[in-house]
Length: 81
Image (cartoon, rainbow, N blue to C red; front, side, top):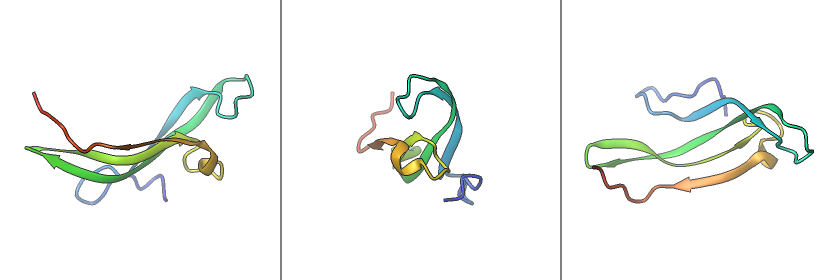
């Protein structure tokens, strides 16, 4: 995935990437590393459309992404206030 092409033509987010202070290799040494992920789905709840599924982790956009991913999510229900 091209991490620089993070918006769909209709404005929905497809990916995000930023620097995060983390120790992605559990080496005991923290530093700034790429962090981000892919948004794989969007859902509309009542009147609000949000990213509803995706995966996140360290080293997004690099060869280390396959080891850095540690969080997958899916939002199946949302109650607005």
